Length: 88
Image 1 (spheres, rainbow, N blue to C red):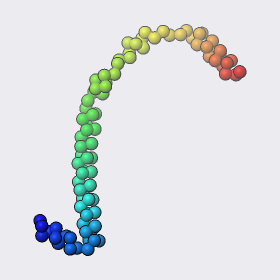
Image 2 (image 1 turned 135 degrees about the vertical axis):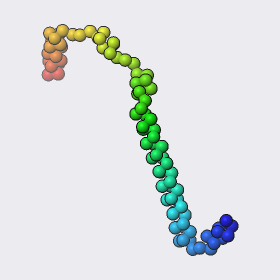
Image 3 (image 1 turned 120 degrees about the vertical axis):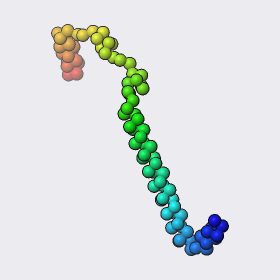
Image 4 (image 1 turned 180 degrees about the vertical axis):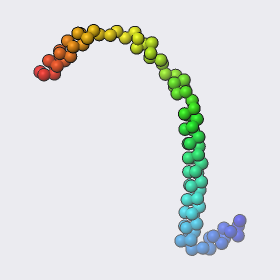
């Protein structure tokens, strides 16, 4: 290893920079590959889970049944009042 480092130190600056950037690019590609692989696995795992159970979202179906419904005539009267107020 010591001999390798001495040979590397004796090379020109241009060659040393080329070697450095080559190593950086190779390591970056290696890390990027494993990151994508891990990310892909997490997406697959996420799709398998039941999101509602995971997030513990409330079930609104029962609550929607308890919401009072306005008669059609009252809705028309409200729309008329809103239109009159927007015209002012």
